[in-house]
Image (cartoon, rainbow, N blue to C red; front, side):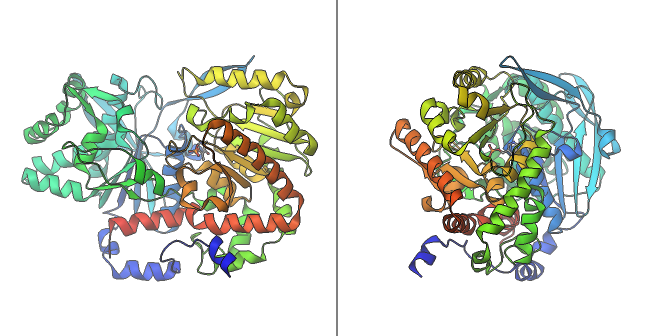
Length: 580
Ligand SMILES: *Cc1c(COP(=O)(O)O)cnc(C)c1O
């Protein structure tokens, strides 16, 4: 019993989802949300390749998953985002990463042209196409034009970026009006979408609402979701840029004045402005909400409501495993953990886990057929191979190189089990550090005859690779420097698909207890490294022993299923936005 209690971490107030829906009916939620008054979700990045939009990483995946979960839950939901007419793909040649640019045509992805809207920039009138795609209770409304450019092209404080952000905000707001929609709530998925809330404030004010009332109204209906840790690191825009790109789109002199007051020494951070325009503010994991260091204009520390990200289980869980969750009443129809999910997990046995892994390996092999590694080799794995994976954006704080600090020790862990280590992750275009780090890793790998054939870098990390690896590998490695990961969702896909998780206690992983997964910690990076290697050894031995495998897998699922459930996330948002 004591053991049970120790490992059992249900979220507060888990009810059956039908009870939840009943509550929704009775409260103001149904009055607040309707097809004409939808939940609106603004994002500069969407990662939804099926619908023609490739993002950069977790921010975009989260946006796509949030819409999919809303669709499943029947929530009137509109996602507003740019459709970028060009995207990059990464290839690797002789250890060098190169970007390839590819045109994308929205007509090929089933979008319907609605009409054009206009924004004013630098004495020009820019014409933007509004396109739309519907999915039951939800839709994607996208803003685009032939010269819109790529996601995150150029510097984050460049003219082109502010143009893209203004186009989404002001253009998107006009698009809503065009379609007869009034936002019940505006969720700003990071500050690049600030201009949407500004467009609303301007519209209310110029339509005759008292300015202060308009500020109060806009603030009450705007949620700013922060994914970043330090405000100081954020890019700034200048007053001159605002004079050219923003002010021409404002009708109200009062709003212009209000905005001008938010400048500090001729510059503005969009987070400062977002804090002023949004009374509702959230962070993306418990830890992140606690440590995000943001201050409002008066210098007061900003409080963020912790709403941990989740994933759309239907998108990311292999069908066999998802069926198992449903048939055993572990997840309900919207993939919310049932009341008895922890008890029902007790039936999961090693034989079943191994069967799923076999099926997952087939999925991975299918993906890898078209995805050669850095040496141009096509990899195919047998059921008996053992696979570690590290898959996430290649940024320094995630430490893709950590496992390679002591290559002989790494070899000594992998070789006895004939294990492979698959690395994948996109490097941000223009990143000054990571191309050299990747080269360094590949040099280490190439100078050891075992690692050379058992460590593989797969370029151009995307949804397909994320899915394939989470289905087909045995152990996932997630070792961000503690305090720097806001949430992370790659590891959630691993948990859903029965990979064992090795992780530092950071981001959304830290919503759970350190004993719920293979934890890596230490006073120094050397200590952490030592623990990483120990945990890799332990994870291998757990997979060799049925009893251990059952125990560890159940413990991991008990702790994490409520955390990774996208339905749990959306419900947390609804509870926050529409309190009973
Ligand atoms: C899930 C996913 C991510 C999320 O990555 P984190 O590093 O965990 O935030 C990024 N990119 C792709 C392609 C994904 O599928």
